[in-house]
Image 1 (cartoon, rainbow, N blue to C red):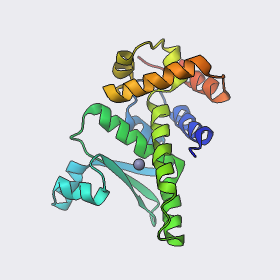
Image 2 (cartoon, rainbow, N blue to C red):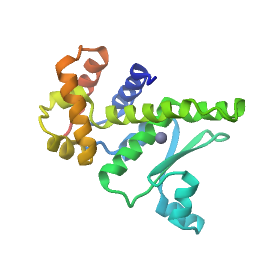
Image 3 (cartoon, helix red, strand yellow):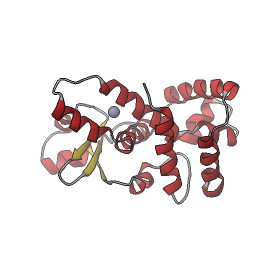
Image 4 (cartoon, helix red, strand yellow):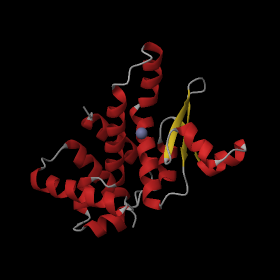
Amino acid sequence: MVRTAFIQRKVLELYQLMDTISYPIQPQKIIPCIPKSCRILTYQTMAELNRCSIRDIAIMCKSNSGATHHDVEQNRYLILYNASMNQGRILWTLCHEVGHICIGHLETIEEAEIAYTDWREPYDQFESEADYFAWNMIAPLPIMREMGIRTVTEIQTVFGLSSQAAALQYDRYTKWCRSHIKTAWENNMLREFRTKHKC
Ligand SMILES: [Zn+2]
């Protein structure tokens, strides 16, 4: 089960640490706010540094889009992403990876791997949680309403999502507008947005 309240709190913590808020969210501005040591590199740079192909890096990362490595001894994180993707996809990938770091998935996986070598159960949950983090980071529903968002195209242009992702978020948004109950998280997110939003 996705720990929605816990993940929303992690998103709020980053919003509270950002000096200004503007959309589309710039992952480069979020990284320094993560309370952990974290660097970011493209597959392309990593391939040059290691004198190998971009394909080799993708195989090492087990992904064509991106991955995060945790250096346990130094307690440092490295996010790698494929810069040949479109902007919407890069934004999504980076926020998804930041989600894994902020939620603490990588520490859990290492502990799990030490304890149970064939323990696969949490991985799907971790992917869903990182996605949930990314949605809340990139286009928070209360902020969408505050901005008066009305169409899929607006979601796409304001928040930098791909057309497919924007359509999915539009679906969530309309359902949420119909049935949502105001929460403390929503109030706190709106407070950050109202004081720090720059067009
Ligand atoms: Zn993931």
